[in-house]
Image (tube, rainbow, N blue to C red; front, top):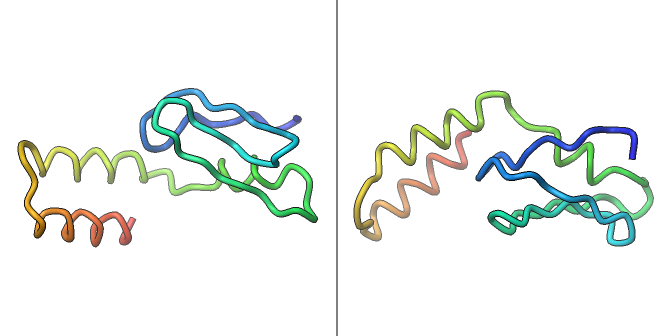
Length: 84
């Protein structure tokens, strides 16, 4: 594995690469990214591909929603995540 894995963009935990499954796994929040069968090591490059502002965007959403969430809050959160 030549390319270094970035930490999880969702929880910040370290992640592990499983060469046999061609997948990257976060043991902190169970996030996962698989690669392409025909392209060895693609899971790593796909895992590392992200917007530099993604973590900041997620943190802003978390700050806006403290306390119990309603169904409308959940829809709003999903909409905002899709825009990141």
